[in-house]
Length: 222
Length: 208
Image 1 (cartoon, each protein chain N blue to C red):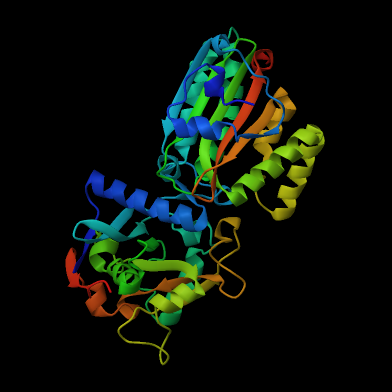
Image 2 (cartoon, rainbow over the protein chains, first blue to last red; image 1 turned 135 degrees about the vertical axis):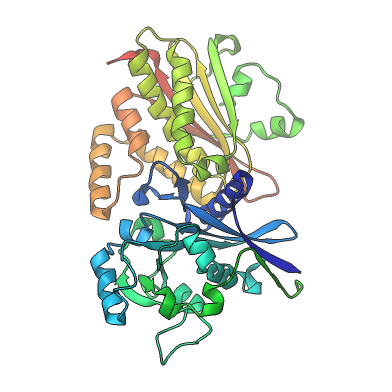
């Protein structure tokens, strides 16, 4: 069984990704989407600007989006460029990155029945490739993310010495404020946080330099 | 109380529908039965909730379109259009949110009887949504609308969120609308078929 990861480029593929993400997000979290009206209190969220799709024999089984501008963490997380600059300075790379140039992978979904193949992490890591993050924009970009702790722990890794060198590391930015829209997602014991990822330091080269599209073999369904 | 299809004297599309008709339970304001030939103008849309979930703005687009269509039945079109759009949108957003399967079509129907306009939606719902709808209707029809409106705003402020549930109360308060629902259990699944109604006096719709 071959799992193919590719950028959604045609109108049909972008629509497929939007319907796929919206259906799962609505079922799991009661969220609706819009390109022109956003209101977290009314559970209406903005769409990502770019999509990565994961297919098996042409069937869409996983997807993830990318905010290119007005990231979720800025819009709703209260994270400022000053917060990011502070982290860049701490890491000694403030001269290499601009806090304003950042991308945010978002709306990671896996189709029901396909949860146990590790597709989530695979497609999420593909979303951290230079090819997907930068596209035709040659400027080095930062990556930001926000999720509940359990997801962050499942997908990413901690800072040295407590880390797995094959995984992407994240740097704590801020706790994510509480919004009603996340009531079905987060909990007191599993709060949401915003994190920063500095590609040259935190993304292992095989992940960052992964070209798109690519295919991997999956174990057959049990 | 009969289904509006029956009021129009239409034959139910299949025997199953006809059999289950008798099980409709009515909640909310009473809605008088109207003779089959009393409809002057009507329009019905069949929609996939998923299309609205994917682009939430479509709720407004559909409501505006239906309202614009029926506003031509009024001398004073603009206030009629605005109020109708608001009322249709209230039912439309619920009919999109409630169905457990967002790929199953729902119906939105508007009938103009001359003296009143009746808007209704039809969808499937699960038990918790049926209970929520019954509870909400009971509260709206049994309490003073002005008082309820204030309570709801206060509740929203305490929650720190925008006030949901204000729409139907506003329709009741500002336009003296009648609000009702008819609900029947579906066989073989733990779901219900829900018709939600807003009935407005034509006179109230034209008011500036």
